[in-house]
Image: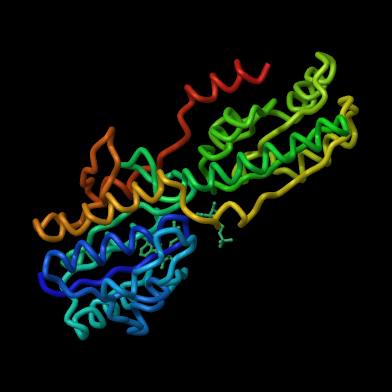
Length: 321
Ligand code: ADP
Ligand code: F6P
């Protein structure tokens, strides 16, 4: 394999840049030419390719976001769009492709693989909902950003004896909410994987008040059954002792310099992706399993969803008292 391409796709995640850097430098070390595709499948369809040398990926290790930019593209989901994408890859003499992105992006990678094109995926998403890897690139940084926010919100909550409802991202997965709830000392956590009725939310907050706490933190996953506004509205009609305030962390969770963990994960995954292409291991995603980087078939990755580990939920219940 002499010429490959790399793209970042779906929601950006801190660590995508170190992953691009590792792909480029490792491919060049293996005698390949590398092209970056700007704006994911949109750039692929438009033929927006850029030659990347070791110099183009200098100084990006510590930068959040992605130098290749990212996008969501509906046309690529169609058979016609995928045919056009294959034509563009062939026009540029590309023989292999590395796709760094979330579960949707990996579904796109699988579509190309099923049409016979050599593809390797790398999991990049703050949600940690991708099957086949213990951690995706960006999760650790996002979690640390959330914890920083929770610590700050607790300072002001305690000063005013308030309850804060804090919404975190994660799409349909409760991982970020559950882990930040445990590590940020939340009084309760609402996640998509486990419903909690609004009466119980109110009872828990009131219980924290009656037990003498001077603040309460409720972390609410964006995908939870009861959304943050609904919870806040319900609490207006139920005096739980605390005054209630809401904070939606939003896209702050996606930005920032990647943590040491994410830089290492991204670097190892990038190198492993090139190793897979060199060895002819196609149609796989590089996953972190235990300490190892191991290829997992994209069919398996995209046919399942990784949900939050409910053992952590039980732990959160005990520790929140
Ligand atoms: P993420 O990769 O972060 O999960 P999306 O779900 O929005 O983000 O997917 C990113 C892009 O991947 C989509 O805009 C689309 O171009 C492509 N994609 C998603 N699902 C499929 C699919 N089933 N087949 C082909 N391409 C897909
Ligand atoms: O998948 C990453 C993610 O940040 C989700 O947590 C969130 O639901 C979604 O992307 C937000 O998407 P957008 O950037 O299009 O608002």
